[in-house]
Structures are given as C-alpha cells and as structure tokens.
Length: 412
Ligand code: ADP
Ligand code: ASP
Ligand code: MG
Image (cartoon, rainbow, N blue to C red):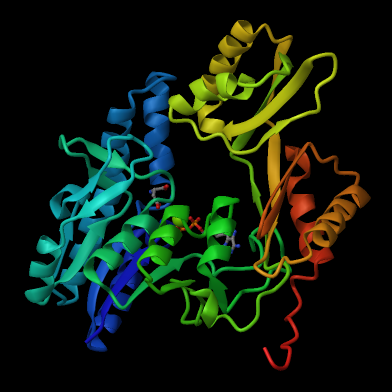
C-alpha cells in the first residue's frame, strides 16, 4: 500500500462541481489500494478577494491579521472537500495547519515551515480516513496563524510528503505538466516528461509559478518524487526528479519571466569599499530579498548601484535606499517598477558565452533593450521593459527551438 500526497490548486477546486471531481479522483486513488493525504488551495480567486477586502480598509494592513484573513480561504476548501468525500461514502477528515501542527517561523506572509507533527495525520490514516489538509498555512511557536507566501500550498504538500515519508507527491493543476515556458503565453510551449530538481528550482525561482520554489527545495532535499499533472485529464504529466534520472541535459530547457520585481538605482555613490554594504544592508535587514545587483564602473570617484527587489517590498526598499543615499551623499535615487526579468534555464548550458550571445542577439533583433544581466551556472537572466516581456519570452522560446522534440543522442 502506497502513501500518496495529492495537492489540488485553486482552479482545480474553483467551484463545487470541481471539488466533486476532485473527490472522485481521490476515491479512485484510494480504491486502488493507497492511503491518501490531500492538500488543497483556496478556491480560485479567493485569496485575491480576501486581500482586496483588507485593502479597502488600509494600504498598510497588519501582516499578522492578513495571515488570519488569508488562511480562511483554504479552510473553506478542506471542509467542502471532506463533505464531498463523505457524501460519496469515503471517510475523510479535514485539518487546518494548526490542527496538524505545522510549525513555521513568525515571518507573516512568507513563513517557512520548521516542523510538522505527523501524529494527527497518522492517526487519521490508521483509522482508514482520507486526510484533507489546508495548504499555505501553519502556526508559529506562539500560536499565531502564518501563511507561506503566494502559491505556498505546493510547499505544504511536499513538506507533508517528506514528513510522512510518502511515496510520491502529486501536484494537480490547470495545465498538463511543466512546460518549456508558460503555455498561457507561449502557444508552442512543449510539455517536459521529466525535469531535474535543479532546473525546476531555477525555473520556479525565475517565475514559472507552476511550482512554488520552496516545494522544489523540499522535494530535492528529502528526495520526494514530484509529479505535476492536470486535474482535468489523465495525462501522465511531468516528473520532477534527480538529475541522474534524466536522459540528457539540454542546453536550454525552459524560458521564464517574472513581473514581480522592481528596479532601484542609486546614482553617484562614492566609489569606495563598504558602500554597497551600507546601501543594501538596511534593505536586507528589513527581510527584503535583493535579487540582482550591479555596480557600474566608477567615473570621477562615483559609481551607480542598481538592484531589484520584489514589487511587494518596493515602497519599503525605496525609502531605505533614499535614506542610505542621503547618508552616503549619493546624487539621486531612480526607480522603475515596470520591468520584467526574462530568463533561460538549462543544465547543459556549458558554452555560456555562446548561449548568452545568442540570447542577446534574439532580444536585440526585436529591438528589446537589456537593462541588467545576471548569470549562474544554469541560467541567464535579463531585465527588460515590462511591456516587452511576453514578446521576449516567445522570441527566446522559438529562437532556441524549445517547441521541437529534442533529438535523442546515442551513447548518452
Ligand atoms: P495552481 O492554482 O494549480 O497552483 P498555478 O496558477 O499556481 O496553479 O500554476 C499553474 C500555472 O502556471 C499555469 O496555468 C501556467 O499558466 C503557469 N506556468 C508558468 N510557467 C509554466 C511552465 N513552465 N509550465 C507550466 N505552467 C506554467
Ligand atoms: N491560496 C494561496 C494563493 O492563492 C496559496 C496557493 O494557492 O497555493 O496564493
Ligand atoms: Mg500554484
């Protein structure tokens, strides 16, 4: 008897008819002789609706109270799915994050899971019940409700799979699997049968929201096979797995984009040791993740430092940068929140310079200006004007011929 964790995203539980279909699938899995833990998201649009309610009252809602509000979305779904299962004669029991005792740190709205108590879930499984757990939420040591960041139900599912030693974690969503690029933007995107944890990590962190980044980190760390598939059909989907299980590393596997970052430039900072730390230290101290950082070559003893931060933290980061700029007697602070980051990802990106120059050439042919470039072993990212994001993604995808089935080489 296998233990299977199934996670259903917002669209898959978007209305009661869809919840009923999820119940049917869970029962089929159960009847094939498996134990099932189901992790669900809020119904489609619900988390946004709840966010807007608070925004009607203030621009600066308390982060603690936001988590109290947002966690209710998932609570509705676990109740509805358990009722649907019960109504079909399948014993089921719902659990919120706090009822399971999913302990997180206290970083409201982006909490990290620290510990999962498996006892309540195990007892329910031993009673023969299907366990239905609210994704995206936990509690901190003090008992406050926390949430894990948008898209965080994937992470709940994988963390639960790891804690209970599940055989597989299936992520049911509204597309057939992981594609070479967002199929909603790139019509020629091709579904990947397999993708390595590392490639998936890069793709998720660079904007492929099909999986929450920390879910992939957990899956890699605890060796949980991740299976991404559609809740609307029975296609095989994509297996996210160890690199050794992938036949051949491609030069470029996927193209992603991310519109969630904003750019800040501090112009004319003294070109001296310690300046970057003085500028960025206060921002990272506020728990803001600084992503790309570039400093141009200084002229007349001054340099410009440009960096990107999540749009959600833009205002806070900008005021920190303005304060630091005053202290450093920098000339001015410029900002732009209409930027996008497009990236290409591939384990087989051995000839970096060649791949990069091809990327730049493809963008320039479309008249797209590159504002910042950053690279790692398996990715190249460019920040561009937001209005060209989709054009850039399609251009790169088709320029690198990712829609074509790769030829299988001999002796690999
Ligand atoms: P869920 O609500 O099921 O968690 P999400 O909306 O979070 O679903 O993620 C699925 C969406 O991710 C798809 O509808 C698709 O538009 C988007 N997406 C972005 N990049 C990719 C990719 N490389 N492969 C598949 N889907 C992608
Ligand atoms: N409901 C949350 C969101 O919309 C979490 C999730 O769906 O994974 O972001
Ligand atoms: Mg999601």
